[in-house]
Image (cartoon, rainbow, N blue to C red; front, top):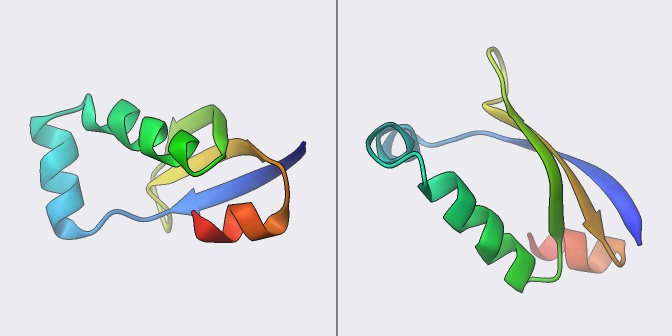
Amino acid sequence: MSHFIMLTNLTPDGVKTVKNNPGRIQEVNKEVEQLGVKVLNQWATLGRYDFVSVVEAPDEVTMAKV
């Protein structure tokens, strides 16, 4: 398995959702796992990106689906 860094931005609606339902982050991680990618670490950040995640995927094709 390969490791990848995933940089993510939330839409304005996504920010509202996470604010009102912080558990949504874990729900999204489970959805990502259903695509064959495992979230190993994840951090909320300030600045250009909202999240930095370290993920594990079998290949680039699978990662591109996410």
